[in-house]
Image 1: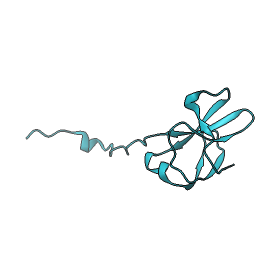
Image 2: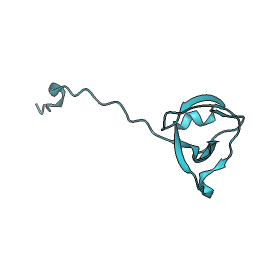
Image 3: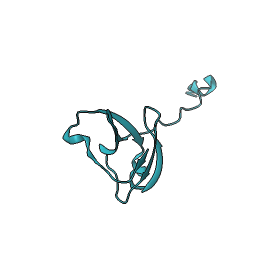
Amino acid sequence: MICNSILGTIHHGTYKKVIDVPFERHELKEHSIRRIARDGVEIEIDINEDMQEGDILVETDHYVYAVKIYVPKPPKENLDPVNKVKHYL
C-alpha cells in the first residue's frame, strides 16, 4: 500500500478497526520510508510532513493503519552465571 498524505487521526474516533504501524520516535521525521504493519501489510510512506502517534496513513474498507510509537527493548546482558556472582572481598 502507498501513503501519500496523512488522512486524519484516530484520536477523533473511528468506526473501523485500527491496525498499528510501529515506528521508533526518530523515524517520525522521515518523509520516505517503508514499514510493515502489525498484520504483515507493507506500507510505503512518501509524505512531506512529520508524523505523530495516531496519524492515519492508509484506510481500507474495514481497517485503518495508524502510526504507533514503540520503544525497543534494550539488549539483555550476558546471562553467564560467572558474571552473576557478587564478590565482596
